[in-house]
Length: 151
Image (cartoon, rainbow, N blue to C red; front, side, top):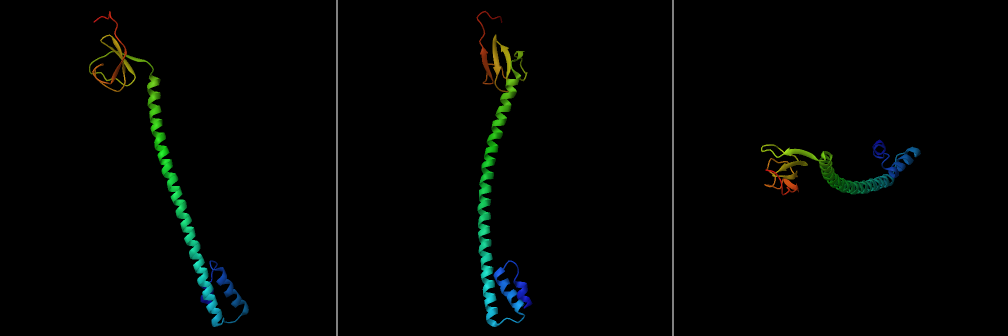
């Protein structure tokens, strides 16, 4: 009967109850009682397998839900990071204000937001460059030269 007691643990309450009845009676179970025990043990085992399968399916569903939420969060984070970078760049260029670098000099590097004069006009630098104003898209004419400019 010891092997029956070992098999009947707390995970199998119905079959455990049968074993406890035998122990209380103090006698060896009959063949019919043993057959009833093993049948109930099989039912308990099947019940545990079903409940384990349902727990596994719930865990899988929750995992899929969590995965979808994580992917959505990653997408939102990437979007917010791009916006933050754009705002930091905008703030940096606005913080500079009007930064006049004087007359354009060949070989000098100009940064975004700088202003220079060249051929009498005032030019705004849109992107880091060493190009002469008017020769590329790096500079934009802000104020056109007047008619009586000096050369």
